[in-house]
Image (tube, rainbow, N blue to C red; front, side):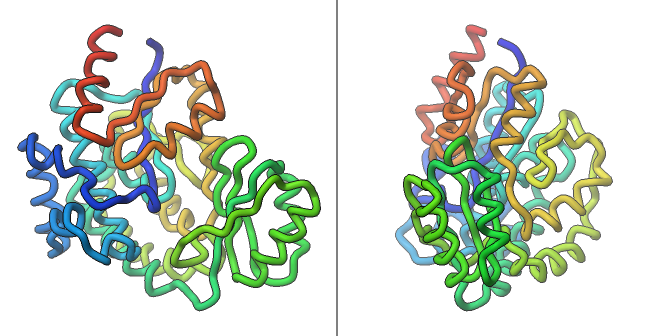
Length: 308
């Protein structure tokens, strides 16, 4: 086994019941839920485990997701499993930053709670996102730039899957042109706003003030930033990266390719779903990909590392 990357999913992977077995069976996980609740004033077990409407609302989704991710992370660390590098998609970048030691969990919870609120409040009327299947980034960039209105790339997920974001009419117009240019499918996404577009700059500017108050620590391992798809090793760079990330494209495919080039051959997805695992497999079929979502996944992961 070469290097190991921990990776953390973003908004959209959430589901009712996520993290419940970890909460019930691991004291460390319960302590993280208690900490997140104390910091934010929210009943995170209720939001994560019981039927409710809050989990699909951005201001609650983000803190709930991060709580589950950090709870699983801390259980892994307690059992002696640590990464050589970390990365996360959008919101998941905060999980990566906690994993590399740059930000304490308490401060990450406080910042992400505000991030969710700011993004919720910044969402303008008429925003939309669509997944474009089967076209290169270059063609999609050209079409977005030539389309009337605000539309741009939000996510470079994996080969053949790129997400566009912006004003609903502009996203629709760009999608129609992309179909003409050979896109296999253009799929409107069920999201509450045009995330990772210039329409969210104001949310990033508000978040900047909160980030300025956060103590950044020396890294135990590097992480790969969404904004640059490059390794970050200096805590001084983190604030600006997180501010700009809200309104900039997420370079996930490029981030994975960077980690592959640096010798990573084992990717462990920590948190709800298998979205990032599927992206990694489409980028490189040869690497080992694990995911820890359900409690039963933990034993499988520990066995793999014990036999490595």
